[in-house]
Image (cartoon, rainbow, N blue to C red; front, side):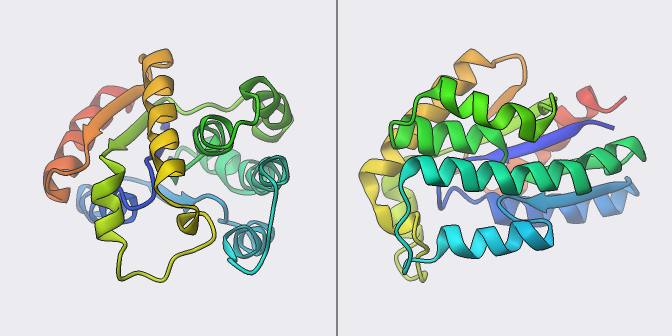
Length: 202
């Protein structure tokens, strides 16, 4: 079974899409797990709480190292064992998030992000990355009544830069990227994802 990732700026609808996707996969009787980054392990969840806490101030390079640490534990403890057991693995965010947010969004050199993450991911890249693309202004409206985490509080300019970064990544890694319009109904998005999954599931 393949390793699938879901990416997009804050407010693009990743959590909603994953929730619906889980329902559809359960109906089909597929063996799968769904995880999120940062998080998915005891250490990862503690790192997540630190990274997203508005009371803490972290530099972009400090963020890179913390995300990579959470990612390393997740790959070793969860993703690789699940893939070895034949499960489909779906992750909400992965290394592309670091490239988009800390790289394109905050100016950390992409080469440095790759180098820091190389031992963390142990050569594991997704076979399919689904990018939910959307105008950050729409996301801002979606999130207006939500209590925002530290990253969401950094504002519109960051999200615009991150979106630009994701589109660059989608162009560079076009063989594994599926670009979807995140303004569509979640049900339509999930149907498109399921069609693509048929192609990559062996």
